Length: 331
Image (cartoon, rainbow, N blue to C red; front, side):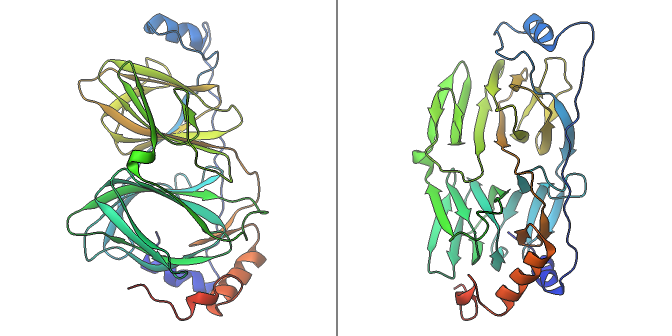
């Protein structure tokens, strides 16, 4: 999803930006974090070093696309990126607003519908609608032009995540992976429900192929429940809270409410407690850092300024992956 202003600005060859967050390392003296957790919980955690919250940001509403509203948490001044993640939007759109024809190159988009539906079509002839609970995992690769518009009346909400591709994968052919809600693997135990979009939780492993190694898990914790989820130690990870409030990291942490992103520091995994009267719902997303230069210009993400210049030329002259862009318009 990309705004009108951004779609216009990428033709100016300006405003390239890249910045990575370096997670803070938080130390507690006199007793270990494991001791703190064990003293406050009947469930024995599996982490010698749990991941703590290194940064907390409220995703404030802003206009995007044509008439749509998003809460942007990654891709804003406080958090430009979190390698390999480039952007996270919680969007809300009602007709006639939407995200009309716009291009992408060099990364993947993951759209997860929470309510309503979005109809997608692209210049290669692909068209379809994803509804509540469905996921579209789109690899833009060398280039795609598409539209994303609300499917029917009312307000349609969801999450869209941008995941960077490594330099060797940026010019691969576009592809899609689509998962209907009923096809997403789920598990439930002790008041905790997981939907595994990518990665593994509760012994359930998603079949989704991730070129950039990624986990994407939707958790719902009923009141007075807790969970401890392992995360590969070399990965960056974050939480985005969809509904309710909960305690993350260690039991005496300050509770966090909906529409906040929590960047997690180093460690073995995440511990979460719902000590409130309403259910807590959040996504946990982690990914292996690429540790490559990032040069982004709107919907184009490459490794060098020269590659961005070439991408804009390719799009403008409809070549090298954008051949069908010249004549195509969504319907």
